[in-house]
Structures are given as C-alpha cells and as structure tokens.
Amino acid sequence: MPVSIRDVAERAGVSRGTVSKVLNDTSDCRVAPATRELIRRAAQDLNYRPNTMAQSLSRKRSDTIGLMMSGLRNPFFVGLLEAAETLATKERYSVLTETGRSSDGTYASHGKLSGWPVDGVIMWTMPHQYAEEFIGARANSIPVVYIGFERAMTDDAIFFDLYDGARQSARHLIARGYKKIGYIAPWADHISGPRYLACADACAHAGVEIEYILMESHEETQRSGIQTAAAIASRPPSTRPDAVICHNDVVALGVMHGFRRAGLRIPSDIAIVGFDGIDEGQCEDLPLTTVHCDVYALCEAALNLLTRRLHEREPSTPRHIMIPTRLIIGETT
Image (cartoon, rainbow, N blue to C red; front, side):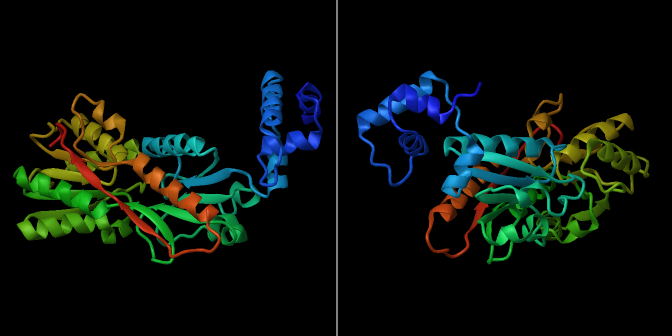
C-alpha cells in the first residue's frame, strides 16, 4: 500500500497539516527546525512519495514545464530533450513533452499540453507559428519561451545564429576551391531563410555559383537525403554541384550514403556540409563537416528565462538571446 501523509504524521507524532506544510515547503510554515527534521526523516524512512497532482492543486502550480518540439526522428531533438530534462531537474521541475511531425515542424492542434497544468512552455516552432494555435487559450495565461528561430520582438525567443553558421560553411567551401555549391533543403520557403541567404550572400561576394536544390519528398530524413543524392548524381558532371550544404545533419548523412551508392567519391568528386552537429555525423568513417548548434546552451538560456518569467510579479520586456554557432571541419570537405 502507498504511504500516506497520515502514516508520516503518526511516525513523527504530529498532525497531518504540519506534515503537509513541511513537505510542501509552504510560505506560512512556522514549524520548529527540530520538528521539520523529524518529519523529513519519518518521510524518508517510510519511503513516502508525494501525490504530485494533489500538490499542484493545493499550491496552484505544478512544477512542470511543457516542452514542444519538432518530433524525435532527428537525433538533434533527442539531444534537446535530454538537455531540457537535465537542466529542469536541477531546478526541481518536471518536463512534459509534446512532439510534432519532424517532416514539417507542426503539432497536433490543441494537443495534450492544452489540458495539463503546466506552469510554462518552451516551444520549438517556426517564426510564424504561435503557442495559441496548439494549446489554446491557456497560452495567454502562462509564460511561453520560443526556441530555435528568431521571432518578432513581442515574443521571448532563444535562437541559434543560423546566418553566421551557414556563412561559415559557404566561406569554408569557397576557401577550399569549390566553384559550384548546391544548397539542399526540404521546403521551398527555406530559400528566404537565414541559412540559404547566408550561403547566397557569401557565394555572390566570391563570384561562386549557388543552386537551391529542393528535396522532392519534403522530409528531413536520411531516406529523403539518399533519394536527393541519387538525383544529383544522375546529372552530367558538368551540370551538378561540386559541393553541397545540407539543411541538417540527418539529410547530410543520407546525401553522403546516396552519393557513395552512386559511385561518387567524397570529397574529391563532391563535398558535403551538414548543420546541427549531432554525434551521429562524427561517428561515420568520414566525420561530417557541419555547423555545431549547442542545444545545452539553448535549453539553459530558455529555462533561465522561463523561470525568471515564472517568478516576476510584473511582465518585463520580451528578451531575444542569440546562441553562437561554429563550424566543425570534418573529412567530407
């Protein structure tokens, strides 16, 4: 049978109300230090586990943070989840996760977070999407910190310096002597995004040709990367790029396998650059050249900002925090 507050009270020789105040650390708790220690020792001896839902109702907070992110097929988001949970645990918060399809970065309308008493939300989403679309009116009564992409100044946002990361990639390829660079992306609207714009700007400055290559399946998967590489490899050598920059590492790994299946040598026939810096890219026999995005730093900044919002009495000016990116030079360029 589960141990109850009554059991702890009987062991400590105090009332249930006193046990509740001590274990919940309520602000009006005026229990003597010796009695507090007696109660905590009794709870530990009995292996008492509090009813988290009951506590949240009584304290009007759940000590739970909602984390919304774009699926778990991409190891980048697995790393993000691990970092968020590690950091939240240090601050005595639990994490409730909601994921969307990693192929398009969307979530189910009015998902589970809309009905769960989370204290706040950290949300990975595109700049034109808002928490209200997915958790309903609850988004207006709790703090929301958006992560991943730069947004309007009306929102709290933590994001990577995608432009600089992509610019580093393009400049690296240009310095290595590549003359025709392809940018592989899953969606057409990425042509106006910071990664492609940075590559295009660097190429224009150096007088190097750049081609926007749209993935036919519109999915951020290795399978789609393999298909895209096969299509590129089937073109005459004079018409295909001699280097490609991929939207992320998952796509880049698929592209690498696709080129190899087609008989192309990497990097002598064609070079590859990824984006994200996931471990899998560094475990290949040819470690991937990629842009490292520090998910731990991203989550740490997001959690610090969210906890600040949870404790402030009056809302302050929205914050924008940019996390730097850096190029990791592997053996694929």
